[in-house]
Length: 267
Image (tube, rainbow, N blue to C red; front, side, top):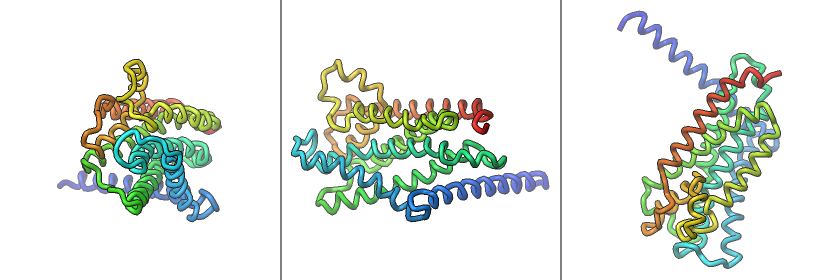
């Protein structure tokens, strides 16, 4: 190995270390400045989506509505609602970080993409903990937490995370410019939730309703989780590749928008 190669490796390592320090500082700032202005706020932010999920599952259970699929309404509701919880919280908090952390852009060392990556890392950690708590909850209720296909369930989670990150990065540049965009996105997510098939089995719908619903990638995320848990679940509305394509396209557009608009972020 030549001296030039050694120097290049050292330079690359120094850059990676510097970047990781920036991301770590942003993550710690977000943890400390959530509710209560301390690390306790992170506990609230983990319990918040968990309680949200339990409320939605509780609605299934206490309204005594017929179980759309499977033997347990708690298991079905949990499997169905979890992808929406992942999408809602990961994408929305990535966008919200563009509003709450915009002042960091006054420091030349911090770029807009750094803010988004830092919040992305934090939300992935948070939603993973929520998933673990969810498995414990379902197990305590006496239902099996093991999916029919564990590998496919893991891929379903990663696919949903990828879609959520892509959607967050797509909307974040607009939130940097217009803080109220985060509110607009909340209404859009409500529409996505209604059309995601959480409350019904899309394959049982008339053909006229299936086509417009099929354009919603979150519906495929919900179906993906169900397929990994139910061996006989109909796969008619599931398109794994479509989820990844949508996530990739949104992420690419978001990165391009971030590059084109970043000069207008700090005024």
